[in-house]
Length: 337
Image (cartoon, rainbow, N blue to C red; front, top):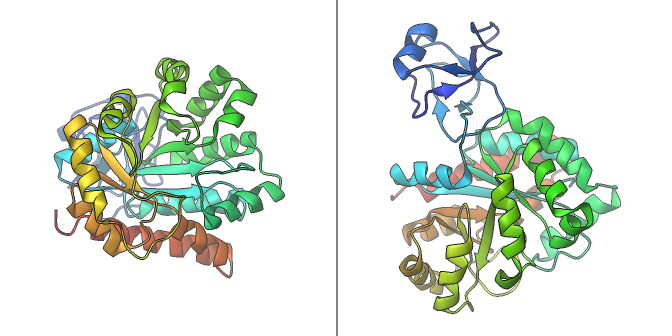
């Protein structure tokens, strides 16, 4: 049966045209069923975004997507929260090993259950990142990957995926391009959100005003050393979700998630009802299951995926490995919810 929470969408039969395919359709769920039939494989198109899925008995791929007008990163989390489902938020560094592989990996992550995808822009001094992701930044830059190349790649791949894309970049590239131009360009390319890890709360006000005007959600970070009062200030200013850093230091794979994360989640919950996603150090299913069990709305996985792409014998194997790991983490994060 077709499952959809939002009726406004663009959809088509596999290999055939749906009447009115080139225009936006407004129809009820019953109308979808009557027009397409419950067992019709679906291929979904369009440029607006949502996490809503259409499923049929024989889908074209594992999760046919309907992209609906007005969807946001926050709404993606709220939809999942209503189903008591933990979001999977994978991270990739664009351009490592190359942009073609990045594009393929984005699609693989989407098909494997990713709800929001962080896409890192290569940068020469990624101060929040550990050796694995630093290496990815360096390799991408050596190959000549520029911000515009990342934006162009995102514009090509975003219509093919249903996961919301949050761009992860340091502030220098934004300032160099011009804030308004940067935001307009990434919005046009299909980005829904933005993380700027080297911009402290006190310096985000101007950027927050411009992201709101551009329709981009600015995600802010809280850390284990953030006092609770400041957590409240960060949560109030954040859009999309609050990024809770699980450990002091930089990104990277840890053998376990620190127990204090459970307490940090509790502190944040006292300050906000916004979604909270935990990152830095989650690299496998067991850690994701643990953090989800503590009540996180999402788990962020980066270094493990980046390493898989870097160490694969060829890009195809790397893309498959990334998709397989993402699927296992998504499953584990929701086993006991």
